[in-house]
Length: 218
Image (cartoon, rainbow, N blue to C red):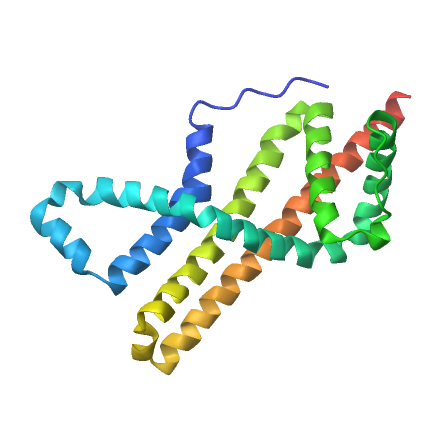
């Protein structure tokens, strides 16, 4: 296979902006609008620090959202995996043969594989694809970053609602505000499921391409 093109110097920064800064900024902005006292104090005392503080706070919140984002990702994967079980079956059989030869590990059949086991299989398949086709690394990484973005954004929505519930702010919500909050959370969760489905389908497409190319090379 041809060597993968080197990642641009700012690629990792761009990934961080997507996966952590954007969801963290979403949560921080929502909190600043809901509880503006801190922002007003900062503007009064040190207005030149407003933007740097926002960036630092958004990035810190984005990192803090990651564990909850992983839980959202687990839910999204649990929804997507059963629906793509048939598409994954030949890929899992292929990977099972490789693992049995190299590590003596026997994978359960796709028809009865739980989500927890599939999570490890999915990771191993990505490692195989990156090794077999280095040119696919950028695509696989970008799909993973977009999936993290969606899951962390959903986590930001859930954390904001949790803060409102703990502080009692929900008592001031109108019926329309509750409906909007439910809609935004539902939309964020749907986006997380959609991105995970796209990520898995992209991974399977790369695997199928490698299989076709291997058959032609025989």
